[in-house]
Amino acid sequence: MKKAMLIAAAAALALGMGQTGAGAQEKLTPMKLTLNFLAAGPNAGFMYAKKLGLYEKAGIDLTIEEGKGSGTTAQQVATGQTDVGFADAPAAMQLRTKGAPVKIVAPILQTNGFAIISLKEKGINRPQDLIGKTLAVQPGTAQTTLLEAILAANNIDKTKVNIVNIDPGAFVGAVLEKKVDAILGGADYQSIQMRDRGFEVTDLFYRDIGVPTVGLSIIARDDRIEKDVDLYKKFVAASLAGWEAARKNPDEAAAAVLEQFPSVTKEQIGKQFDVVFKLMCAPGAKRLGEVPEKNWETTYTLLTTYLGLPKDKPITDYYTTTLLPADAPACK
Image 1 (tube, helix red, strand yellow):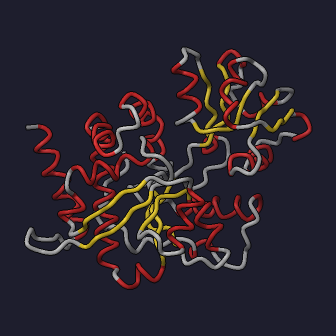
Image 2 (cartoon, one colour; image 1 turned 180 degrees about the horizontal axis):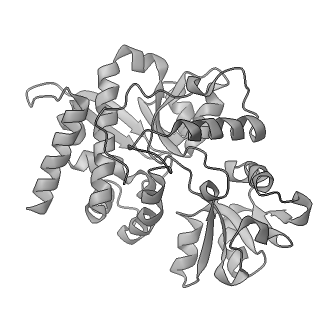
Image 3 (cartoon, one colour; image 1 turned 135 degrees about the vertical axis):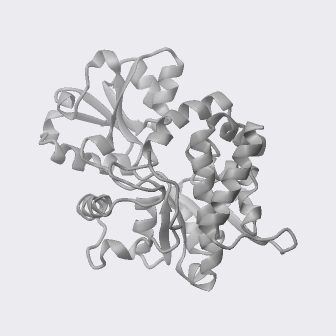
């Protein structure tokens, strides 16, 4: 009974937000969504929305495929290989600066899940505690590039931190074997691996120490949006409804992921949810999918300063709020 009520409520929410539901007799419009990476907690809301029939009720026959990283997903959106993508906002923004017609239409994780990760016994409870410590990083990643911003925001002299480059596959082992004091990684990934082995872990989220860049977002091509605005509005509305339902019923959401992509485990998804749900609303945000303007401005400043994003276009060129439903689920 509870599940039936949830499905009915979520479907009503999606239809209400999209304002143009599809009747059973109408032909469904095929769409393909490419995820940021493998199916798991950070993208579970889409699978749950599909399981609840929200896309079908919105007139969409959705195919969901796993991705190979945000950069690759953004490229596939740009080249028209997929109708909509789920990717880190900075990856989409960097691609747009190169002329790709990719736009952010609805940030699902309004802040990133990047973190400075260490064993609790190391006593790294604030950025300043990194002074004199060994920090492992992976060259070329956004986490590593944005380390400069963290150090600057916290008045830390980079020469006072021993920064070493190591293969990401060795990150967890390096910390547990105490070869390094901390790593730059994902609180929904490496931290969980460490905790699964029985260790107490401290996460210093980037968003809490001066680097609250916008995180995983729904992205699409400009021309496809313009060609069928209503279709993309319905997709966004159904997706937000799915994420809202996932927050309310994480066990069912995890089961929906497993049903469609059985390679992941329910336990792993549940642990990722502990992190993911905290990132769905930035401080001060009022609704899912709608990032406060100050966070966009901060993201823009950080990316132009540390990731080489040009300043020839305003931040508003990279995203749009026109596809967001007026009655999107509230942040709580």
